[in-house]
Length: 385
Image (cartoon, rainbow, N blue to C red; front, side):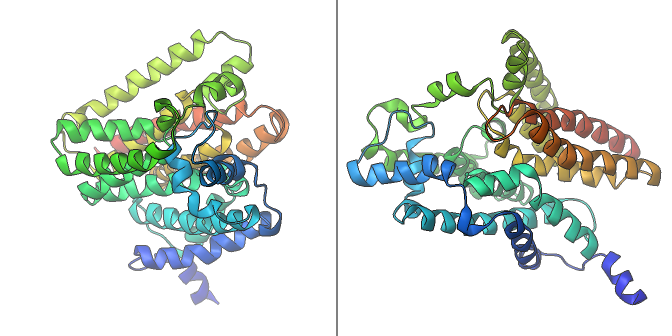
């Protein structure tokens, strides 16, 4: 018995991607099916984003001008639109399970901490039970795809696979708004540092997506999302962003504008040494990635709660930093991280939001996680010195 207990806390030897993926998938699927019944999925978002526009393309060769995503999103999702609605939704659910497991396996492999069986089960379980993850999978959203693109972006950068980095940055534009800031900064770095393979990979994907979109557009703006302005006007006050939070409180749009500009200036400042070519550690790179993601989620004018799924990377990086603290500080930071990611997120949804009400308050955990990230990074840098 004692041997078994010790093994639960001993680091897993050589936890490569394949081993982590094969262990993550059944555990994650088992957790998710407790809360998500494949026979009773909410197909609303899947219907609007993929199935209905896909059917329009197949039937008429065009797509509604009100479609908020780039036309290439509907084209790429056509393999799921050729089936009856529920069948397409179940197939997309299976893909979400696979993409979520792959994302977590990649994150676990790149974060700087030893993985034991017990910590593995806890991290995968809490990630699967993160409210934005459950919401995204339940609604059939594309956010888990974006999470996988994020994981691949970090993986290819850390392994210096420059062409593949450009390819996945191009694929991020299938759902562009929640990774646009990180993609823009990395492309700027590639240009300044003459990483032509990255720019070529990115340009090739964007060219391909544009070519497959051209036969189906009615006006050029549809290529990048012709209906986004209408969605912005309609939903900006209730979406999970800094704008939604302050506008729902009755404050002027000037307040989120000023804060957004300040956050973007700060982000540019901390990225500047890297953009200029300074060599940085893998951990520092993950900090820059995490900061860009959180700022993007906070300042983008149109983004729903399920997009906060991407908080998993900053939260994971904060977890690794917390584990480097002394014993007393470690437990305090771990408890705080848990509160922000689980009870706070769920409590805000139940008390101040809900499926038929505003989601503006759901941005609060991201607003709290950003200073946590910066404080932990600052303290661990001092510890390393």
